[in-house]
Length: 497
Image 1 (tube, rainbow, N blue to C red):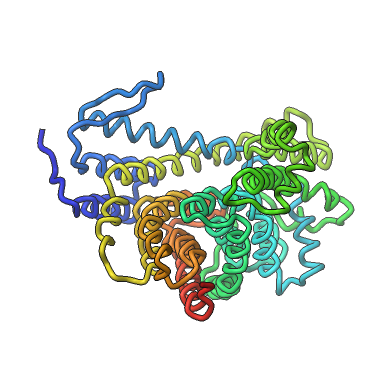
Image 2: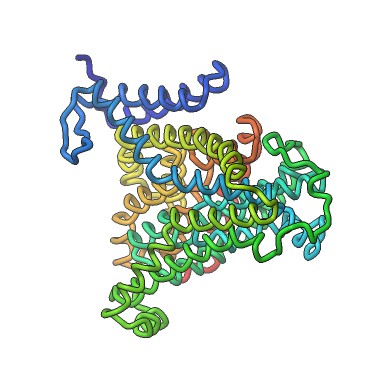
């Protein structure tokens, strides 16, 4: 069977062809995103220069398959692996979102926002609330929990829906790429051998100026693009009711805050364990907390319980249960009525899961095609600013396969060996934290149709694909570039070495 060339530049050809296929298929041929991503995965796989594939079967054993059959099996595995990670949480968060709207809980929170900050600063309040609340939770999940608030604000104010949605995006995407305990930043901390506490502080502080810039980008985009709410049955007559008929603020916030708290506790225990048991990461407060919780004898037992309830799926399951109870009590719904209401959001979640999983399969196929290794080879031996190089590599990998987490992990593993000798002889010139920030900003930018975040924003906000490209993709790119500029300036003014 004919095999394509094994040239070191061939992965870039695979990337270019598959990316062009997606753009043409969705934009010109009007192909459904799920089908387009699957076919793009097939194109990328068939173009790889492999004679055979080794795929892990359901029994856990490796099976060697011919090239074409191996491509199909690898696509299926990539889709299944992505669905395993996202399906439950997306479905549960969709239920929570429906309950927040149907019970009036979202409107209750919005009214309090407007009382405290005023209508003119509602977007600002959403941005900073998301910035803080999203520290321990994935961007996709955080957006799903917060977007009902944006919808309720749009219904109440009658305008600025794009502003509210993008402010949630702005606050959530920065922490997803810059702060532990998100998996990408955690992988960077490990690969770059950084202190956990210092990296957390650097991520939060380093994101402040780009977040402010991002807010004004949100305002600008909102002035250029007017997006209505297309997927909500809630009307103004339903929300113009006495506040006494709405749930209390505590119960309105509980379905959102409770999962965040549970996930946050699990993340905190992970930080404590690392800071108390790893010699190169020990901190005084982690050691004190570790000993206060019983030390080695009891800490593992306590942590096991916390990790169970703090697992994102369990935390969201609890949040969904609370949301359903609040809605049932507030509206007086029977179990039969609850069953009817849960159906539509689960159907919506199913479509999101399929598209996102297909994007994961496409990203996995590009990794197998060797795009990451090709970038590493192209950058080897070049005399460039390592902060800038880190950003560029992260951007290329991000655009190639979509996942910010994979881009961070892969880039950190590429840059770390290049950084170590420079650190050893003192010629790096900047603190490794700047490389950490540069990778995070690079992995954030240029979000498009192979990014799960793109489709989560697209489907849950009700925007069209064109509107999502014009808003979310532009915002992510502006945040990425402004973050790079701030990082480069800070590394020159305050190198910390």
